[in-house]
Length: 209
Image 1 (tube, one colour):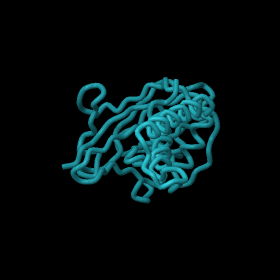
Image 2 (image 1 turned 180 degrees about the vertical axis):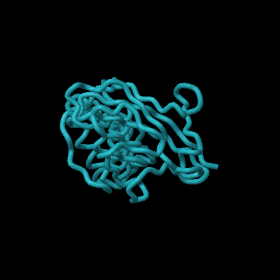
Image 3 (image 1 turned 45 degrees about the horizontal axis):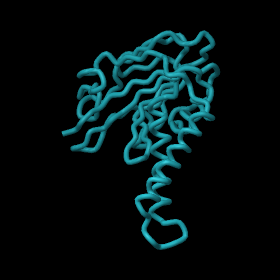
Image 4 (image 1 turned 120 degrees about the horizontal axis):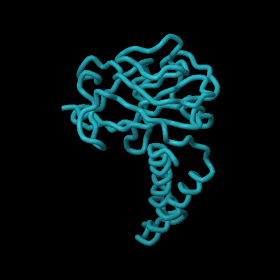
């Protein structure tokens, strides 16, 4: 099964490229017709599907929990305490059994906004035997990457008056990926998905007043 978040990210990027191409009208200056737009959208969909069939992605079958989330299934919201309106500390997290060959666990909190990917939290080097994290705490050996504000650490902080939608990704890796504090989260995530066999996903939101 392809990761839902990754599928959405790939499709969004492909669609934006297709729309940009359509807007340019190819080599002419005439506006694109509805038929042309439909054909480009269809091509973008086919391209995304083709990429999914060839790109190695982990199976999304690792259970992940954030016990403090509030609301119904499919509409979980992060409490204020774990955002920049509160203490802005990472929430407690737990996950199920990982593959026996796991060397380390990496996790990411990412969001898609207007076709761009942002990272609110990235952690590498979590010991393989770890099954949970306490609020605001990390085990010995774990290192934290840069967030969307270019600082090493956690921060869940959408713009005022907006609702941010986030996905927590938990990737058990069969080999260690050398990372130092302040690492580039996008580069590490790209490496992680090419070696992880399974992955955990959990989506949630937070709306600032």
